[in-house]
Length: 132
Image 1: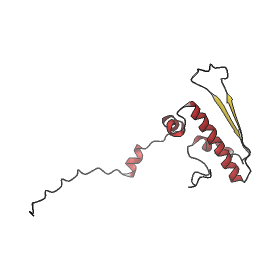
Image 2: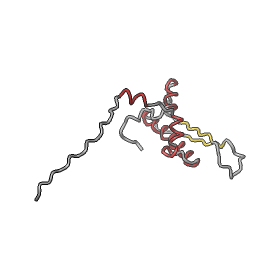
Image 3: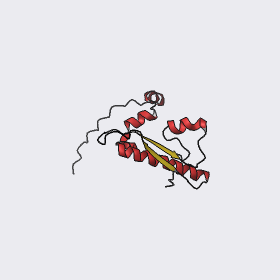
């Protein structure tokens, strides 16, 4: 065996370390509507049929959660209304109104904006278990 000298490894260039303040200055708020527009495929809204199914599923899940938290035996009614019933069957766009009524405790008026206007706002989000 020969003891050949080993060449030293070249040093990596020093990286500039970011501070919390400099990183924070690059962050931006994104509205729920902007997030949905950019991530339709992740949220189940990438095609019209799937969007309607996702809408109904989320609304019913929320109704069941509300009834469960209130200790009510759920009574949920779902109405899907075609807002353009006379459109040709080949039309690519459809508009529907989805109404979900349940016997949960309701939403306090001052929380309506948070419940419907913010992503991931709710009483069960912080929990690590799924009930269904």
